[in-house]
Length: 465
Image (cartoon, rainbow, N blue to C red):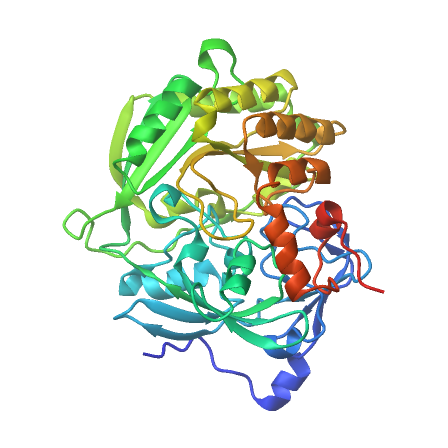
């Protein structure tokens, strides 16, 4: 069954749109740490990808993974290629161009009873970006990462060929190199993914106030055994017996009997009006915010039905919320700590952050299930911790200290969020997997034609001479 998203432009229009400059000054990730560069757009991805160094979607990776390298500062941006090529409601298989966003799929298909199988905390992510970062969400302990639901990729590989890859068939090695490969194995052109049939567009949500980090970790594991979606906000600046207090959120799709009969209308969004001055995110300010946020949840436990956007994408309701971190921008530090490290691993990270004065409005802890076959896919069995940290003079030293702590507990970091990890820390975290990843790059891109600022930083990538 074909569900047209939009028609192709005619040939004259395609010729005019083939290479459209979008920005001639600065390219930045969501952390707003910019570098000089140029974005080129086209709705013809096959043509756009010829000779291109790197692809980019909606720019929601926080760091430098979708920023072109210093010696070739032009990036192929896929957002004009946003057609749904086909959808079969019987099999729930969707085929889409790489520039289609999760938001577009939600708007188009939720009314028909289908939702993306895995979604990160923003719906402003393209299909190509979801594969390249192998995004995960609140249901990782049940459904794994996005790549586990992808059935086929169409790519332009670095030597210029158009190739199709599947998980267990043709070019399966290329498929799993691309899943979580941060766009370093070619340009994703099309994605086939199995969508999730849902009984209603409403979420039955349960929230609980927790007193400290140990209670939180225990309760997270309990709720993960009951609910397909779990997540929580943590106060990472309180100390002593209150360290890690916060709110645990669990949810499931409401049944047709539980849900209101009306379809929830899209949420209205506001725009964050300005860049905040640096003093606005000082430790006392963040501490006051965290205290208010904790005590607004006065009942110990609350249950109710909530809008799907409220549950999955609360920050999407505020456009350009990244402005709150000021002109210097921010970084998100996201790590995963294995269950083998014990529940004390989370406490050790929070204690380190508190000692070093790291003020984070956002500290989110989620449960993670088993790792998939992606060569550098992020999650593993354990818990993930995500911290938003405003860039300051000591940010590099703070990230170094966090990485050393995570290393000592056998954890690793998420490349889609990173801009400060040193290559030696990354190599140590990934010493069990990095060899296979580099072998795959040698096989598919020995000349390193596809590169990013992140691959320059972590792998020392340079163009072949």
